[in-house]
Image (cartoon, rainbow, N blue to C red; front, side, top):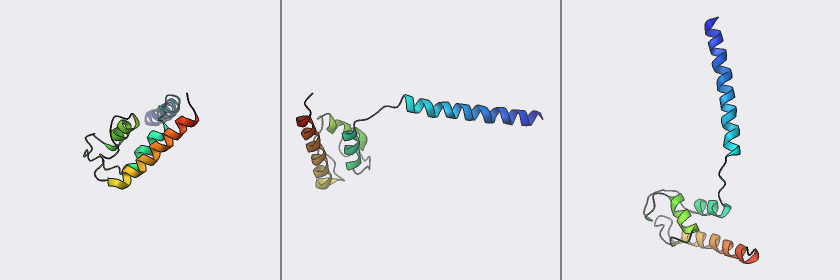
Length: 100
C-alpha cells in the first residue's frame, strides 16, 4: 500500500508540474520577428562559423540588424545571398507601405 501511495503521489505531482510548465511556456513565450524567422530558414543551417558568427541564427540576427553583409555565408553561396536579399527587399517594401 505504501508503494501504491508513493506512485500515485508522484504521478499526480508530475502531471501537475508538467501542466504548469506547459502553461508558463505559452504565457512567457518570447516572440521573434517573422522576417527574422525567414532569414534563419533561408540559411543552410550548418552552424559552421565560416561567416564569423557562432551559428546561422546569430548570423541571421546580425543581417536583420544590418550589422553583417549577406554574402558571408560560404556554404550557402550566391543562392543563399539571393534568398536573403529577397527577404530584405520584402522588409523594405513593408517599411515603405507602413511608415511608423
